[in-house]
View 1: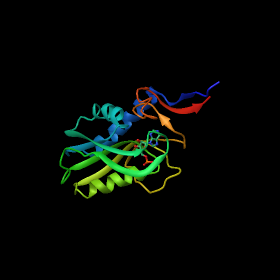
View 2: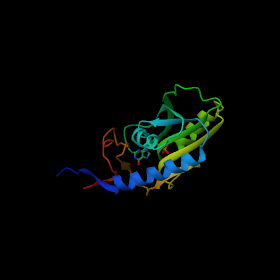
View 3: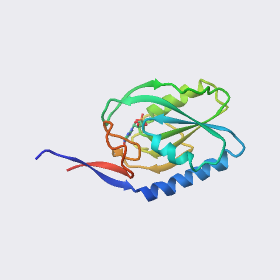
View 4: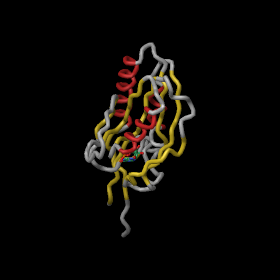
Length: 176
Ligand code: IMP
């Protein structure tokens, strides 16, 4: 019989909601009196960003940046490209990058370097998930949701070959 890849729940929707509330409280506390620009990294961060901003009663703007590093599979190609630049000017802004997951760190390190060259007033990173092992370049995550084991995770915006983004829970893929 052909093998099938099944998603198994790692963090369910209730646990995600509690964590997103905690992150929003941390961000609100740190950015009181500031007007922040949140930059969501496409496509994986769109669900997380949508939930997070509705808990942030702060003056804010939202923009997106498109990056590609994974060639429709589970392995990082290591070659990062900006597929869609942010549309707002970054210079002088308090920028908070919203990432779905930091894995090797290559994408995030590239992005933070790319944005810092545009001279923001401040630049911080909020990542829902961190896969700290194996990390290829160091990345400082200012606001972190969960650490995850070295397994490929999907759901809540994260995909595998463009599938599974619509799962409401964060799952890992298990071969049967
Ligand atoms: P990195 O460059 O290896 O840190 O990978 C960053 C990007 O790869 C993330 O923004 C995701 O889009 C994707 N990615 C890395 N690990 C996973 C995973 O376990 N599931 C889904 N996407 C992943």
